[in-house]
Image (cartoon, rainbow over all chains, first blue to last red; front, side, top):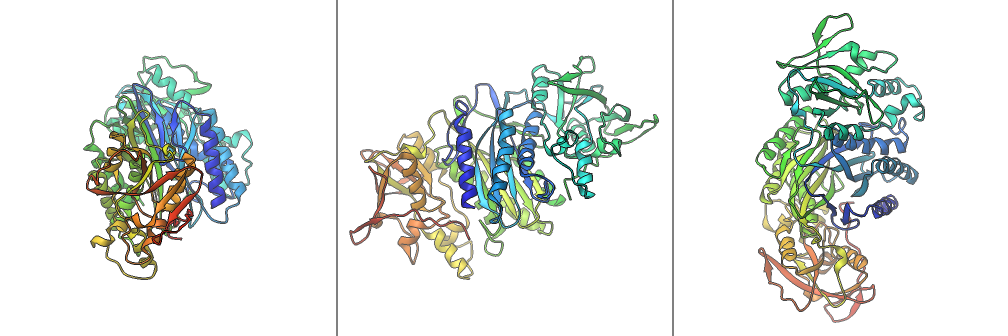
Length: 315
Length: 315
């Protein structure tokens, strides 16, 4: 893929050229050289975006694939309360992939990067034996010792979620059912162009509001399970409180639907949280409990066990 | 690949558990949290290792694939004079891959990591639609402003290379020709278990000896071209001086053979360099010149243009 590769490197150089300060050297060198501010720790996250695993060419326009590729990494940084700084893209492309696809992929990725003041600082390219393979690495920063971990939840704390839940998974179900969905419309944009909650995560960390945090890309039930595992607690979720947004199967999708880039976090119940942070609604959905069980209080008032059964990608 | 994934995460946790100090948190969290020392800049490099592009399952034992995967990243850090700190592995595996393969792959990777005091600090796993796909990200550090770039060469400087050249590409040729080669034997180890020149790169930076540096994973002629491009210089290489080690086509392989993890660097010709650094021979092979041409002085004394024609992987 000599043309694609050339284009990619050109665009990386151009994008990085604007980013004085953070990147001191390295575009086109063996490594990128990244300046870290004093007193900051580095956050590192890597996420695959594989064709037919994380996206499908017939479902997702290339700029949405590029957007989603970077969104996965930004969301991980947001979940630590960090500030994303630089992204590194490894991209393996089939020999017969149209140049236009690559161009639009990078355009989608760079647009999201720019909105989040993230530079595309390097990466690797190769020819793929089968399908489009992208791996994104995002480097962020956080004041030393201040990253919000999954392990910080304590019994008695309140459980919150950002935004609304279920519509991304709903769109995915409908794509699976063969519906043709246009990416542009508002109600589908959470699937095609998810907005990582970077500003919310940062606010929660700066105001010392969140005690534990995770993004719910694997689905609320699975990711709440991760908080409980790491914090050695249980949790109770109130079905009625969930900000469910899907048209059908709303509760199921809100509880288990994956591919959602909202933040799930815990906080001292005595602290007052704003109803919105950076324009994003914040909803209290339950509590952290002693013991190791997760429970759901159903709309009819009955309690049942809540199983971690988030959906796994497109398989 | 639930089993492989579990194993991978377990082994990452175990490996990282030993690495207090650098990694402050993050194994099993959304991001790894990496502490950078004061006055240090971060070096970041990412490299694919794709089945049938960078390795073949019938040629390379899994521990060699794991070793080579990490070696690519360590070599990039070495080429900046940096110290590798942490590695992040993204691994997509076919559903039918034997667990033993994954286990040996990780063993090979971790053995090289340990010898270089590098921790495997995180990564991503996925099921691969076709073939084994690995992407390694290595995070290193270097004192601010001290990274050795490709752009630092000046006319009149001497050109040096570490180690010997050609045997890795020679082994590759013989594998292509259908020879069965045992990875264990000494003469083949440069192909199967290349040793990134981390200690040499660090020494050259600490002693302020190298003015420009690159690793020659794409072959000497191509990578010398990168130094000339970035430094806006030409170069002359003396064929007689090359530390060629292959049995046949020794000069061709030394000039253009890829998959070599030696360092190519430039230095003030008045500075005396040790004959060996960290046990690795250092050989003067030419000079940096004005103008933008690369030239080869042949064994018969005649001069010819030297074209960047390093070999590209296994295709």
